[in-house]
Amino acid sequence: MFRRTVDGQVLDFGTTGLLRFSNLVMYDRQTESWWQEFNGEAVVGELTGKKLEFMPLSIVSWMEFKTTFPKGKVLSRDTGHRRPYGENPYIFYDSSGDPFLYEGSADRRLPALERVLAVEVGKESLAIPYTLLQKEPVIHYNLAGQEMVVFFKQGTASALDRGLIAEGRDVGSAAAFDPHVDGKKLTFRSVEDHFIDEQTGSLWNLLGKAEAGPLTGKELKPQVYRAAQFWFSWVVFRPDTIIYKGKAN
Image 1: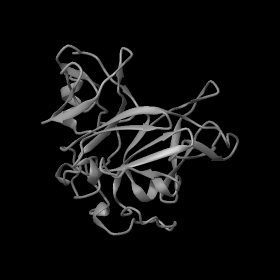
Image 2 (image 1 turned 120 degrees about the vertical axis):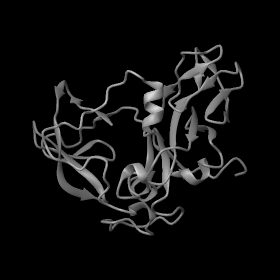
Image 3 (image 1 turned 180 degrees about the vertical axis):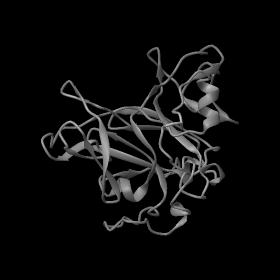
Image 4 (image 1 turned 90 degrees about the horizontal axis):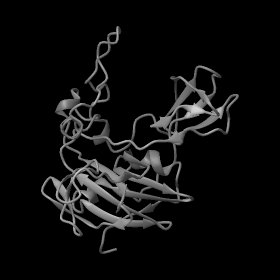
């Protein structure tokens, strides 16, 4: 997700219908420049070299969202156009061995369609596999001097599994945060469907909000990250990525 203001101009975007390394290429209607979705950089046209500002984005279940934000806004399906919302045209895409419509190089350190939580700090980047997060649902990490904590929780359906997204297999959700609250660093562990900080015993949800305990109402600052990014589509742009291999490593 990006902020769509560039040099004071608000841009409207559409899709070119083209892919680069199986990654969406967008265009803006104001200048018709083309933008790479991966990093928000204009690669063709008047704004070539400009970059959109990343904004934190979480991919979570509907249950997680509505519980945390009971008054949150939801996009309407009543758009005036017939669209198969909730349906997946790429059935079992993420169960195949190799990605569809991709002709780039293959980095076999992880399976091509392994989901990762990926983070960049300066020139360094980190990828944490979802298969590892299933075993280690709280990870503390320092990347290029920046402290972060990553939460993982089961309960989110894959959008690229079954024909109906709601019937997709459970692939879980991950999110990354700055672990500091009011200038103090917190350390966390998972407890059933929540996360507890060891300093105050407060309970936190997947979206970084304290729901019980002394810090109730406090929120962790989201780290800018890419959640549920397929490994192949991340590493083709960031080949020097560090792979997190677990506490024992």
